[in-house]
Image (tube, rainbow, N blue to C red; front, side, top):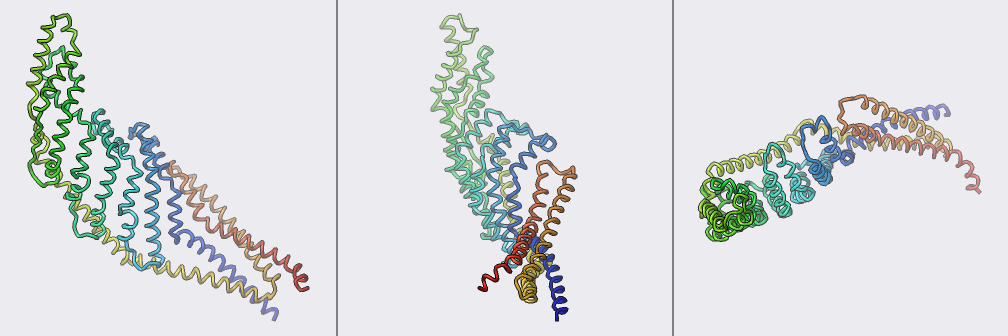
Length: 499
């Protein structure tokens, strides 16, 4: 009987030891590869803003990026603010996909996942709230390739800053019909009408015109008109036109406001010809008086010392010639709004709609391919078996522990036996974890081609992957110590309990 008891104890102990080792591997897999939250935690630990900063500052990668320091700081701040918004949506999508693979949901529902994460107004609003649009525009426009006048660039940036929040609001509203089409919630998309209702609405463009500094445009127009009649002694005049242009600016803006609907209809293909005629007759007298005063305030050295009548005659001659050179009306239609421009806009909108249709079809095809793919079904099947086996393994371990307790039928022997087993397994696994981490870290350190910006990620990944096993090994050690202590303390307490 005793031999049978010992034989059974050895068999059960060996089986328990084997199952505990298998469970350790399963526990690590269940806490990492099979756990969507492990992936989301790993993503949260990636400091995208720091990586982007390191890459831009890297001599090899960023040598062609000629970005001023202040613009770099603005770009870093924008990326840092956008990072949690994107990570939150990405994590939600990963958890949803993980639930499908683990059998918690019967369908992948890719469109619903996208609708709940990236393709919705709330996500776009949160994303835009983190974006400094003027800084981003400045980064992309302030380059040698754009060859843009610095004064005009600054004026454009200031205008965007003035209407930034309204611009963001219009972009959010514009996204709704686009997302509805991509997600097959609507059957058609009209980008021209969508833009006309939002970013190119009459109200928003009028607001943009009100905030736009068009003095540079007006200055260029005046210079074109009078540059051929400016005498050599008055060559400074083009640098002194601020007050002259200020007189024209309200007229120009009002003309643009009056023609906003016609211009926008032309751009969106509603009409093929547009005429924007700006009359300067209402301000002719003010323009003449302002130009006269500019010359009088800046009498050239060549005229000084002349009789006042002769000076007045020179001033009158120049002002008269200049006013004759400036037309009564300016027609922007023929030069700016050509049929080619309308055709280019129409082609761009058509291509954009085709791209949206392709995206819509791709989402449908991807969802169908993923759900019907043999690999996906096998993965769901194997993961389901794995989860079932995982809990079955736990149940079997509990049964074996109860079997050992039943064989001993006393606290001391069972506690000591189980405590030693748990302690030994825990120590072995703990040593294996830290040795494995050391080897992995050393191997990674020997890889010279890892970019400096991401060198810390492999070490962090090794620590995260082995984290569940490390926690389990420590738990087994603690449990083993407690059981061994119980086997020593319990016999001493039993007499007092009997009394």
